[in-house]
Length: 106
Image 1 (cartoon, rainbow, N blue to C red):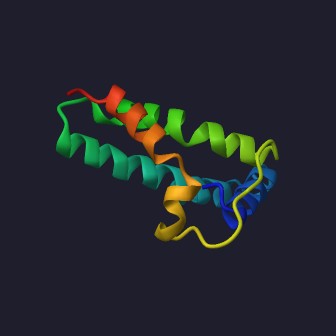
Image 2: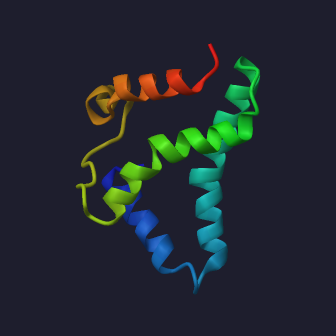
Image 3: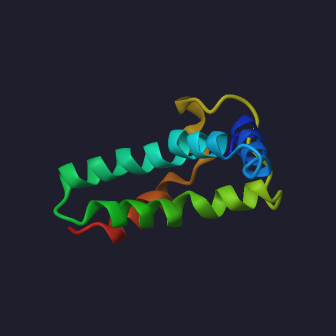
């Protein structure tokens, strides 16, 4: 969610939220709600947990801080294509794994 095109789209939706609330709501559903729903379903299928609040918590701790820093230009947005081949260098996967492992029941 921190690639340049995604950040620009998110900023635009935020800027126009009062004027075009339906568009902002649709963007939220497409980007954030769908991600939460997919993660919730995965957690429910694989772990004996209350999946929805856990999914919210994981997203809040893994995605939102970096996204917020990028939206406010504290960090630069990533350039180029967000394909899977750049994922290991674009995201601190070991840190994410540690956070998720410490959150999930063993």
